[in-house]
Image (tube, rainbow, N blue to C red):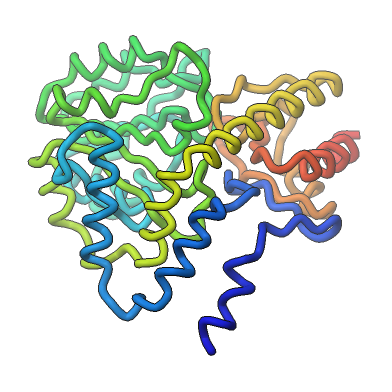
Length: 347
């Protein structure tokens, strides 16, 4: 009976109602998980009475095959958000600083502050990349690089990242957050997962929330050498990942065609939005993600309120960029509603 009640929910496609609130505030994938992931969750329902230990190990084996490293080089987490929290717990405290960009994804800074760590915030450079020359800070236990960066959608060039990793002492851990990796199509960018093999202080975080459309399921992972993995796992909750998320994640990895279609859709809609904004007279930070930062040339807070009044939710205020508005790349129909509301709010 319960399974029958869940079937309509799992079969549903993401809401695309003409009216109501348009949610473009959290960099979610508007197309949702792949059909294969939805089917995998249906098939996993009869086994949700079991702890997910075995299935998590199966996911780790899938990831090991995909990335070309051993299974014990992975930590599977409750979204990559858990990975960030584990890294803060393992590598920062009252005597070990966290170094991060400003602006960037704030979560890891909040975790480090709770632990009594000093958080050193370094402004982005003029190209909105990480200012790596200034991020080599004495006394740092952990450096956090979000690449592509949230909220700017910008990348830090691969040569600079490689040089930075080579220059740091092994006593300083580096967490590279690649949540938006799949949306990049620039030759000046590369994933640093292959560099984990030669850098024992490097940790790379990935998520299933973005390209795989699983933000509500909470699944992510870290790739690191075994010693770093042990330090992360020492702070982890037991069985923090649920069985349905693991089933969906494993199916998503296999459905490469669906991920490729998501990349194509995002790229096309992102380009269309940038062109439409240019015709309205607004500049954007070149985006390599599934969101975009718009230069509004005035305080963004009244604009956020005006859009909310028109049923459009967009990103929050980022104090380092008080005249920029972050908007998630939704469906073409959602972006049409956003543009209409944005033009009215700016009039």
